[in-house]
Image (tube, rainbow, N blue to C red):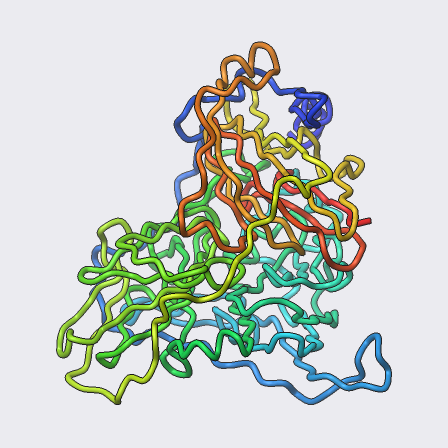
Length: 542
């Protein structure tokens, strides 16, 4: 199986179209497009243990955990300015066990500082820090590794980690490049300049070939950048400002995490991972006591594949920020959609709901409950009519436009064997080499039946538009024929982003100014199963 799969990939993978405007396109088999529905799945193996049915559990019996705020352990010498010292943090990745629900046994997991989500890191704009990420995990993995996947071959250690701060403008040697992994007993110290607007970022493992397993095991947490401009707005702060990290899992009745596998023991990878248990900050169906006042909730989708469609049982959200910081103005929304790795900061006002309960719902099913107290302290926070100017990048400033396919390669039975970007595998030569301090437009041509959340490391970008094209013309002639007008992004995508939803049968365009330190970074689909199996490519800032 290993040899046949690798030969198949090497022989056919490059047929998927790596596109430049004058070269549109090279492509995989016409078979690899399954129409507008979701992709075919490899046949799933039946779980060997009974899986918890969350519908049988009591709801809202556990308090919502609020991750501890990480504190610096001292100071260290600035890596590029020897006469200056900066705050130093040391965070260990450790195995631990915790109850995900009152009525379940403890669940073995991995976490930063032995908790999951890990400690919330609160940083200040332009105040650099040094973080030592230490691997203190066991030598054996407790989730199923597929050794057919590039970077996870049998000659690699089972347990490998490297931490990426998602959305951080960090130098290449501190970005968490997937091949910079290290084993238990080792550590890496990364430098974060924090030279960026206030925003809700998050950190997570990014080890080559096993990111999906390490994050599923619990290796993630919130990383918040603050600045004076945002603080001057008077938004809810302190205990009224908290991260809410959402993800799904499958949990055995014995408390163990269950990760789905295919029915082929020699190739357990599956293209998607969905759980039936929705967790909020590490608890299933938690509750939170709140005062009748405004709260700022920093919503983070840390799921492997699931997208969240959130609503409240009464009232609405006022979205104030997206991935890379504040929107121009608040947006009242009844529903919040978040694809994997996307973030949205919302204000929820519980005033006038004294003594009542409000449920946070995922597609109409309650996953968390807010219990509004009869009275609270005076609320001096504000929800301003305007937040931050977000100047649009002029398309005329772009010196290059790249067109890049989002594709999959199937076996003869129509089952996806791997995902691809630009028709290339991870190990192929780097083809995207933007020049420092220049602007480019990247167009993602989605020839699959999936929506893909695409993330670029290092840079923030703006969504330009999405435009439908004829997939049948594409398959037959390797040409793009548009079938409708370009659709501008909705208001909630008019801020700065680092992850964009690329819909099937659409060309999704983004524009980015490539600032930062030269070096190698990556761009990838943030469905973790896709990312691990070739839907990730390096790019080089030159």
